[in-house]
Image (cartoon, rainbow, N blue to C red; front, side):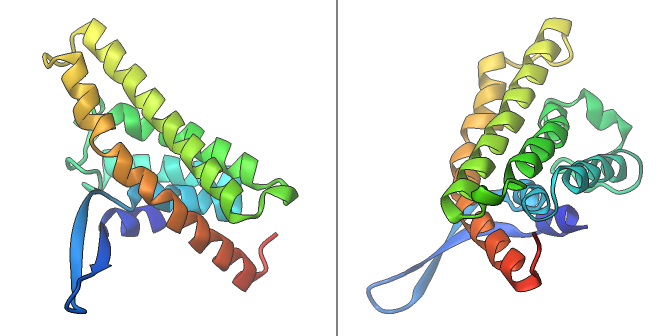
Length: 176
């Protein structure tokens, strides 16, 4: 559920102005990926992977929760490889966060960044394989630019707050 709720939340940065008002800079990302990473940071690899698999099943067979909608036909879109990357990313993120010495902001941020990179590598691999098979006609470099390089900086920015929120929740709930 956390991933679905986070997918509906737009991400933005709130900055103070000189006249003491606040400006809102919208980021080109949602909290969907970070909801998955937070689940894995908090509850480990098994729960993180179950969350990722559940999200994929819900999006493929029940509700249009993905960015471009949903249904079984979504498998043939160029975004689906990134969704497939959720599962190994959740496993790696959860496994690395379970080490007792890793429960600090820097380590959690690095774990989140590593997991995010893993998801993008799997997505790029899916794009490459789809290009070879001929699933989509777009230029491979344009697809990588649109799906990886444009959203990656904002996703990278959100790794720090999600790590901080995970640490705070762990301490509040006494999760080990």
